[in-house]
Length: 264
Image 1 (cartoon, rainbow, N blue to C red):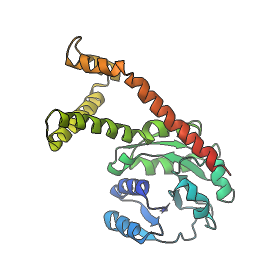
Image 2 (cartoon, rainbow, N blue to C red; image 1 turned 135 degrees about the vertical axis):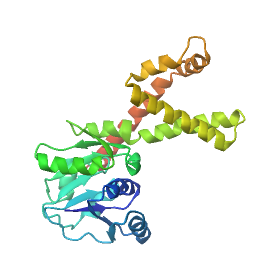
Image 3 (cartoon, one colour; image 1 turned 120 degrees about the horizontal axis):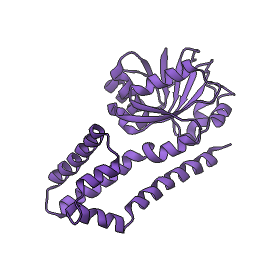
């Protein structure tokens, strides 16, 4: 079985990085950009080409080009029954079937960039016609990059995008804000970076090991009238939780808008 990636962008790089560490996959990246191909081949020891060959039923094709470019990119390709995995936001299974001459073996995946270091989490959706063997192939590929969650409804892909797909950027946003606070307090940029990153790493590790609810962990750190209480009181005053909820909702709305815009 060969796994072909149509498109050599950032998410392909992240997934290939995870898969290549597992070592048992024959990976081929297809991209017109020579620099991208050479970079991926050099970094992950995978094959690359500027043209997708004729596939077989035992192959896997990962659609990883930009959603707006997908129809053109898939025109004329010979799938021959291969399993297709799509990581393109906004393109439903029905739309992809239209692009692929009514091909039926299609699974949608919403990964995120921590896949690159084996700490990703991906939402997967398979329509009713997909058998257990194909689902196992998709799951095994994505488990090389982190955890997976199977979704009962295709609309869950958009909701996954709002939480974990875009989620790393939310974390980086808060890290950057915390670092800026450190710099304003007189720490060097390096010290502020170290303090911010170390705080996140320690808090996440503590949450994983304790098994406690996030709200309880927050209470455990917060003494009424203390320094943490003063900070979280400001967060509450500005309704930070609602701001996050609104941001996630906006991400989902945008995913739905893209889906509508990309529907032929």
